[in-house]
Amino acid sequence: MVESVSIEKIADSTGTPVYIYSTEAFLTPLKEFQRGLASVDHLICFAVKANSNINVLKLLGDAGAGMDLVSGGELHRVGLAKIPADRVVFSGVGKSPGEMAAAMKMQRRGIFCFNVESTAEIETLNAVAESLNQCAPVALRFNPDVNPKTHPYISTGLKKNKFGMDRKEILEIVRNLKNYRFIEIKGLSIHIGSQLLSLDPLDDAFQKLGQLIDELNTKLPRPLTHVDLGGGLGITYSKGEKSPPIRKYCELVLKHFGPNAQQRLPFKILIEPGRILSGNSGILVTEVLYRKERPTKDFLIVDAAMNDLLRPSLYGSFHDIVPVKKLNGRPKKTDIAGPVCETGDCFAHDRAMTTQLKSGDLLAILSAGAYGFTMSSNYNSRPRPPEVLVSNGKFTVIRERENYDDLTRGEAG
Ligand code: LLP
Image (tube, rainbow, N blue to C red):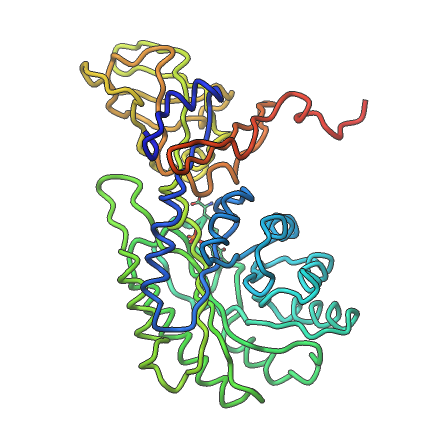
């Protein structure tokens, strides 16, 4: 069941594989952040890359969220979801001049802020802003050189990573401010990594960020008016894992930037959560195609594959997988794999699954609402699955399954 709607009923109607999302599960963590930060001026910008379906963006936007985006395509989606431009921030190491101009023109007034990642980028943004005769609002992305203790592919706040700037580069930009007449430095931003299961690295990073804010405020013509703390809060994928509660995260934010950090007020606090708002809001439902029996372990070949949900193949990530209908029977070591012609196309290795599972049974791959559909592809010429949103006891297809014509659209011949 997803919010009292039967998964089998949805799968009967849409076929499999299918992504199913729960409205309540998106809104519950958002409300927790809103409560936790209620004592300060804040903006919760959902990281669109985690789940970019426009219906999801609209749902979160209607509940008060802003958006953190990283591309012109995400800007387009956020526009379609009718998110107010003054709730949008633009992050990312490689914004093109065209993307910058589009963001500056969003809903005529332009977005809330660009999180700028390098001196070269600020020069380009300044030129784009000049060509539009507009001032670009900027937060400089600080790389605090803190180890987030997460998977190396999703760690972003270390010196060796491509993201952000060190204190020296930021001070140099501030020293040369007169060269950037179409830039207004409004804040600082950070994002040290994703799927963080401890708050300690954030504590360190916030500490360093606070010091840099104080230092910059002595050098800038006007003090900074906001800070963007990025995303990164992890979720529980497996039973052994424990993710920090949102309440604790908010307490940490307030410790560094809340009403008691008086010298830095008045201050708006932005955060960019992606996974924590959407990860546990979605599942990927797949049907067992074949059981291949082997003496020591069986293979369940399912109709979803790495092109639908890449995380296990790319990062070796764990996703819990449960039969949709409760089954008895003896557990046996099982690999749950997709039909793609790669050994890496495997959702679970050596997982204890009941031998009762057979062709036609449904499995739910859990915690698939973040970086699931958004990282899907058409590899092996597989049409991407539909997305379904459950709300108030009803389900709606919010993205149709792709068909073969979708696969070849735009190809000559
Ligand atoms: N802000 C910035 C600038 C980011 O780069 C990211 C994620 C976020 C916010 C949101 O982070 P979150 O709250 O979701 O941790 N594909 C990977 C995750 C990549 C994260 C990239 N940046 C995965 O499936 O685990």
